[in-house]
Figure 1: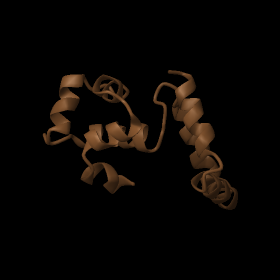
Figure 2: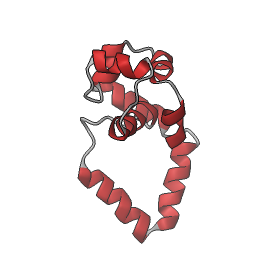
Figure 3: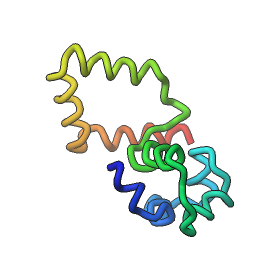
Length: 108
């Protein structure tokens, strides 16, 4: 997934999501004019690329993300790797993707 944002034009990602530039870039703290420049080929800084990946590809709602949630996931990964992998596989197979998408959209 990391290569997805590096190689893909962010405008293509935005259009696939059906968002205008203000909506798309605003979710990661970039102005519409700044986003337009990135879509036109200007070099995108790595932090912006990573935010784009997290929000628009991984589907993480930054307004709802808390450090504690990431710490819990990391603890689960260390203490019960089998359960962590089972949950991860379940999400990747699509069992949780619809609920993640709807949860992210319900706050909009």
